[in-house]
Image (cartoon, helix red, strand yellow):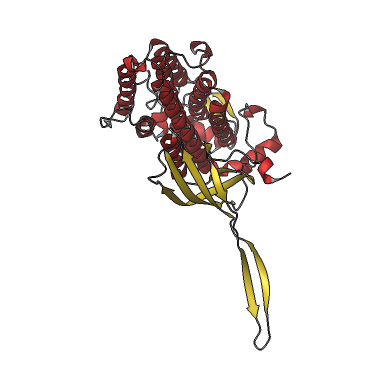
Length: 441
């Protein structure tokens, strides 16, 4: 057996790469201590430094520009990514150097030289990928495992979101490239163009940032970028705005320009997200429609809803961490935020699963599922930091401060009672018999 018989399909952040030449480099850190008038040194091994993987890549063929764009987009993402080395397998690396060369004698091709540097975190976190399950059945031991791991929630979710965005952008470009290559498509190019621009301008209007005019069929990579930046700009950061669903539109922006089936499915999914319930899978076809305009419409819905899920996951993660330090929301409000993210994620997963093949959808589905699981588990932790919540009846007319003194011996916990009962109209004069939500102790 030899390495030539066991090569793996090389890739970086899921983008396939053709490796022409590679070599492995590393250096050990040594502490050398010499003694005067004595030959030789005492050498202490301080450990190996990061491995380096210099590589020579080649991109060729009629679609080499698309492959080069995908590779450059993957290299632009900040932070470590997964390199599938053709010989050594999966390695977490950070791109260090890049050199892209074109030669007049080699049309439709490019030579790429780059160096990947191995990333080894100080402490391993999330050595396994978590399944998207109901964490309500998690036992005590598993709960401590979550507490040990989710402290880096921000970094983990940001990494997952970057992975999702890199994959959905590539899927969009591939779909439109395929559509533009179909016979007779030139009769429907104008429909594609107006449909794409309608959705992009509709999303941009959410953030009140009008997009500059461009042709989406000649600048394919700009459409996902335009949608992403507009959604991120329109996603609220404050808990009250998130709870009011101000970042989730009632209908798919620009849905008037979409095909009927795509608009109907997208609008229904957004309504489900605003209600915090699971989406209805019956509205989706089994696979992308053959008609390129209809396929483009569903792909736009996928882009919009997946980006909404990613943006809201990041925003809610920050709120949850703030709640862990200083609670300002009731457990029901925190649950509503989690339900919002979960519904958006479920819609995005359903769209990916029903419209794309397994190889295309699997990386996105896994990242989305893990994102939802992290947020749900962390929110559960924050809720469990407080005592159990019960319903208590007011025995005699009183104000909230008096009730806090009676129930807890601490009148300052009246602010806590207001937070747990946001529908209370007269906190200064609560009638007897009124039932309030309160912590058991």
